[in-house]
Image (tube, rainbow, N blue to C red; front, side, top):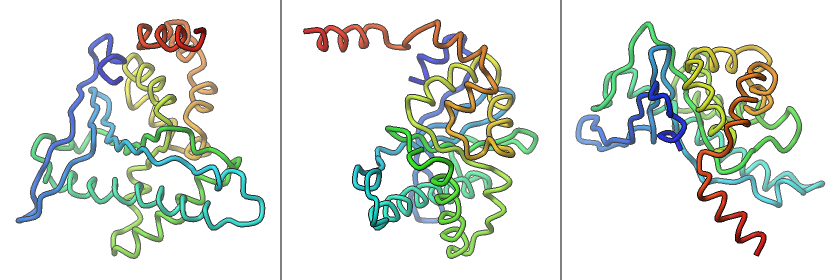
Length: 216
């Protein structure tokens, strides 16, 4: 998807690579996407918000368990970000004057309970980071975004034309921080979103096959 979205060849895309801290082998984030204005550190997760969490009216046990797992993904990206900032990645080094944005991409949108679910994840993640004796200021210095793969596909196309920092600097500040990515793009980058929609699917052949099967 990243390669398809990079149709003007303005983004540099690096895949996951192993690195070592002493004798310990670790893996970098899944993808690093860069342009002259900023960097995205991307982790891709298949975890979905379970149906029980979406429909439960009296018990929050399943929901809380899912929130804990998502918060764990947030913590994971900051742990590897700490390694990256300390020059431990073998294939990429951060630049001091270049903004950096962690992104967790999921299979589907997690925005299931109005404006409460992302702040809840954030609160849990900060507690987990503190328990690891990491400073939670890393979250404020490098604010993260959680989004679905579908929404990120759209955002990547907008970022490759407008610049990573132009999009992400507005997404990760103020009230937009906990907005769903698509809602943010539809409000702040309305014209650019319309152009992406006009352009159509990045995978028209696959969409054609899906439509054919559905019609059949």
